[in-house]
Image 1 (cartoon, rainbow, N blue to C red):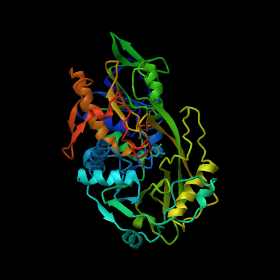
Image 2 (cartoon, helix red, strand yellow):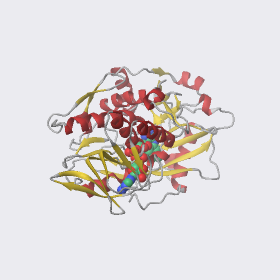
Image 3 (cartoon, rainbow, N blue to C red):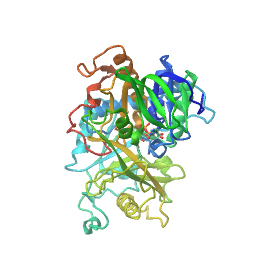
Image 4 (cartoon, helix red, strand yellow):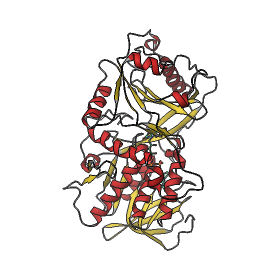
Length: 441
Ligand SMILES: Cc1cc2nc3c(=O)[nH]c(=O)nc-3n(C[C@H](O)[C@H](O)[C@H](O)COP(=O)(O)OP(=O)(O)OC[C@H]3O[C@@H](n4cnc5c(N)ncnc54)[C@H](O)[C@@H]3O)c2cc1C
C-alpha cells in the first residue's frame, strides 16, 4: 500500500528511509510477521543515495568481519528471485557476475590483507600473474604509476616506475546495473508480506513516551505510532539521530561525504560488458566496472591526495566538477590507455553516509526502541540483504529483553551458516584500526 494519508496510523516498526537497506529491512521484518511502514521523503523507493550507487558486489574488505559479512551478503544477489519471493511488474534486477579483480603491487597492504582474508575465510579466488592478466584483459596497462596523485601535481605525469605484481580475482563478484530497481523489488517483496510504504513523507521528529520511542512525527504535524523506529536515512542519518537525541551518546558518528562517479565510453575495440571486470586499483586510486551501453563507470578509491568534502546533505553541489572528472578519468587512462577523455563530462554526484571508521553501524541506541542501520560509508549496497537479516534479528532480540550492549549478539548468516559477531557494528565500538578508512571498508 502506498499513499500519503497518515491520520491515526500505527505500526510495529517505522523504518525511516526506503533505500536499499531500509527496503531490505522491511522485507525481512514483514516476512517475520511484523507490521512495518517505511516513510521516505522521496517519491519512490531507492531515490536517495541508492539510486546513484555503483552497486558493486565484492568481498575485498580490510577487516575479517567485513569480508565475512560481504560474502554472506553476496549470496542474496545470487539468489535474488527466491529471496524477493514476489512478482514485480518492473521485472527483477540482473546480477552481472563478471568477477572482481584486485590489482596487486609490492607494498600494497590492502591487497595483501584482502588476499590473506580470502584465503583464511575460504572465499573462492585465484591469483593471476601479470602475463595472465595481460592475456585476459589485453586493454589494461600493467605499469606502476602510484602513489595516486592529482593531475595538477607534476608527479601524476611520471612514466611507469615498474610493473604491478599481478592480481587476485574472485569469480563471484559483480554488479547490479539498476540499484533503484533492486529497491522496487524489495518493496514489492515487503508489500506481499503486508509491509507499507509512504513516499513524499518527511520525518520531522521522533516521538517519545515513558522513556522510550513511541513513533515519528511528520512534517504535516501528523504522527505514526510505533514501539520501534529504525533510522535508515542514509546520508541524513546524523540529522535523524539528533532529532532522537541519541547523536551525542554514540561513540561512532556519521557524516555526509560528497562523491563523484564518472561514465566514459569503453574503448571501441573492447566489448566491456562481455569482457570487462569489476576492478580495484590502489596504484592509481580508482575502481571501475562495466556499465550498460558499453561504458566504463569510474569511482574513486579515496586516495589521500583527494580532499574529502563533507557537506550538508540538503545543500551541496551536485554537478560533476572539472577537477574531479579530470582526476578520475585521467587515472583510469593510466590503466586503460585507449579510454581517452571525452569532451562532455558525464557522471553522477551523490553522498556517502560515512562513519568515523568507514564501517557501518547496525545497532540499538540509548533510546529504547530506536535503532540505527547507518554509516554505510559507500560500501554497503552489496550487504543490504544480510543487513536486513541482522537488523531484524537484533530488533527482535533486544525487544525480547536481550542486553545487546553487554552481551553482543552472535548471529548466523542465512546462506553461509557463518558466525556474524554484531559487536563489530556497535555504535560504541572503538574506531577499528584495521579499516582502510576508505570506501574499501
Ligand atoms: C556514488 C556511490 C557509489 C556507491 N557504490 C557502491 C558500490 O559499488 N557497492 C556498494 O556496496 N555500495 C556502494 N555505495 C554505497 C551504497 O549505495 C549505500 O551504502 C546504500 O545505497 C545506502 O542505502 P540506504 O538505504 O542506507 O540509504 P539511502 O538510499 O540514501 O536511503 C535513505 C533514504 O532516507 C530518506 N530520508 C532521509 N531523511 C528523511 C526524512 N527526514 N524523512 C523521510 N525520509 C528521509 C531519503 O529520501 C532516502 O531515500 C555507493 C554509494 C554512492 C553514493
